[in-house]
Image 1 (spheres, rainbow, N blue to C red):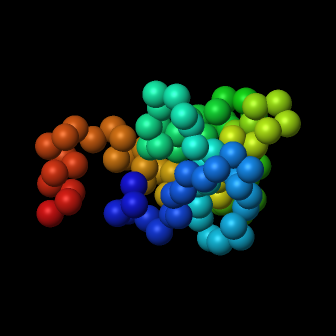
Image 2 (tube, rainbow, N blue to C red):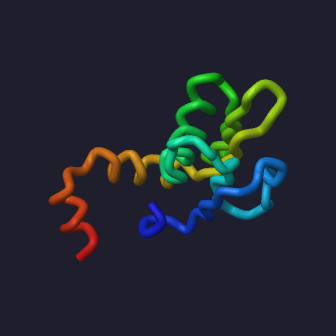
Length: 101
């Protein structure tokens, strides 16, 4: 994900999930359970879409992953970034290796 975009990916303490005011980012609250940080990024995206906690303005997606009034994750992603990540997720391991070269 990092190689195909300039998205800031960060997992922070619970009270630090705030908009950093940059072009593209995903900021998630650290999960102390058995979920990896990478899974947390995908959960942020998935939950924002699944629960309708997003806005789209001029091809930029503003996503919020909420638990009641608590912000668990925020993201600001360009549509082309989301589409590139979808392409990566759908690749086989062999295709990913070829893409790295």
